[in-house]
Length: 396
Image 1 (spheres, rainbow, N blue to C red):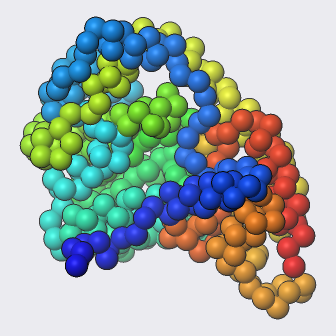
Image 2 (image 1 turned 180 degrees about the horizontal axis):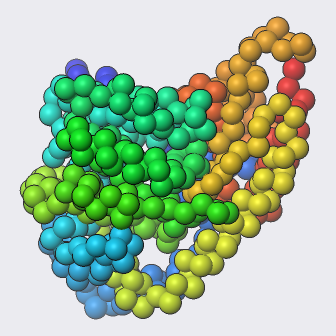
């Protein structure tokens, strides 16, 4: 018999979508995969050299449980520049990707019976990890407010059991960037109601147009003592498979994280740590600039194609590298069809008929959504979106 906690969650919806696209490709069907939350790119030369140098120098032993002191010091300097506040190494923990940073946060902050506010649509891992900690996710619907949480809706969701609020900007899956006023209001509310803020900024390097990413502690410095910053190099350096991320927060939280991580994974991969440290020390910013330019170009290609959709609004795609489509027009009978589709129906049709892998909004708590990644090669992106538009425009 399995443990009862396994009934609280299933496999990641995004992972399931990737698996379905791969299975179709393995079966011989030509598939353009728009499911993955990653950028198709070569390694940064500094990352490559840093990893090779570490291997050549025989680096193969444990580091400190929460990462090399040199890397934590360097990251503390980076976070200080990003937020306009002074951070120290003992306020930073290196983790095996952002997922472990989030898991650590859930396990050291939450007690059974606590509640955590999560704006919806949400990244599928947020509620799963709250449940693993024995707490309860409480969702605040943002769909009627352009996918930005309304502060009054958050207030109504708070009660005596509320322990934390998750803030994810730029947002996965919607691509929305939270504005300054919203972040300031959330910070003020968290202070007033004594809540933790779990601030996931993994897509912070990718903002588009006139939008700006604002670290919440730079807007509200007084919220720093109750804020955990979650970030990783998976997106900003296209290193999803290397599993290297970090958590920054109050020293007492990092101390608890050290103890927890010592009984789970111990330190993050030592070669990845050395590679990232080499990059942070040597980079001139050109690799990051190239990635941002690549993503900005792909976004424009995608928006040009998606503007041809006849029944679906063109997504805003303010940050990150996802288009998030509102499929509401397909969820009710139309003049052409008495049948109401579901997001899952549309995902299956796109995979089987258009040869395009996408992620249903049901994975994100939104039965009317569809997520498309534009981190892939531009020629494949354009071809895939053209097939998607033709299929959706012809939907009966």
